[in-house]
Length: 78
Image (tube, rainbow, N blue to C red; front, side):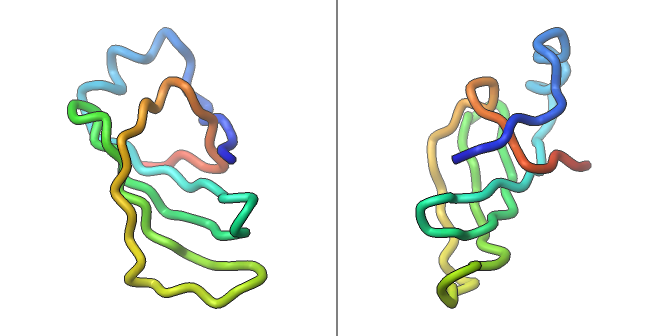
């Protein structure tokens, strides 16, 4: 479901100091998400960007527990 960020294991200490923005893609629902990861809480705020097969509700925001070191991402950005 996720594509890995270009973040090496050596940078994990720096990652935990700030929140991270990244994009991911949900294969089963074919939806792109813009995500804000809160490092200290290990929680991600998922905001839908675009659905490929179905219309999406842009107010359908998800909050999930998440460990960023276990996944990969389509795009990481500041």
